[in-house]
Length: 93
Image (cartoon, rainbow, N blue to C red):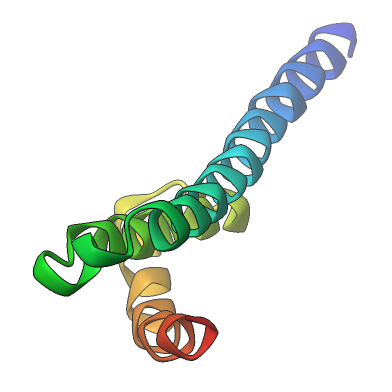
């Protein structure tokens, strides 16, 4: 019984780590978006790589926050969120 409790506590630590990483990644992506649009506005006209990085950062952080760990679950989740993120992000800009 004690071993099961210890395994449960270890598993909870491993589930909190991806959520924390997801939140940090989402914050860093937001800061990157703000600094890119404020400091380098001309770069966005010539090369749209920062926007792609912003989309990837948002998708990765949402996958980490969702708790999906298996490849099929992640792919299914990404199929649901990629189009809405692609529609919402330009509206925020």
